[in-house]
Length: 91
Image 1 (cartoon, rainbow, N blue to C red):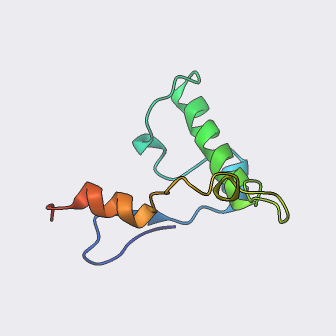
Image 2 (cartoon, rainbow, N blue to C red):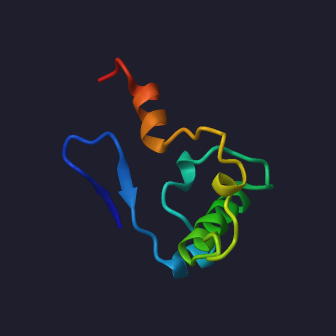
Image 3 (cartoon, helix red, strand yellow):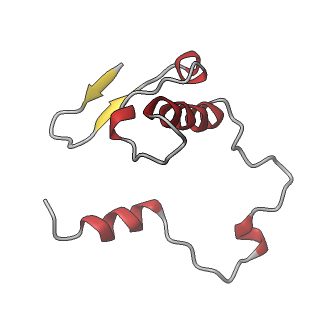
């Protein structure tokens, strides 16, 4: 299902895990070509990555030390900071 919020420059897709597992993903034509073979192969790769994320395979397991804990002296940049810097001065 594709949606776009009023006033937003972004389109949002809510793909089911079944669709992703089948190798299809919305906006496949907007992803960069990564050279996995054909455009369908590239789409299948992006669908797999999103499927794995959506099914919880990229979650840090409880009890494991995070990189933040291992390197407390490194100041992280938040997503908000990146977006603010990237869009500063733009409409």
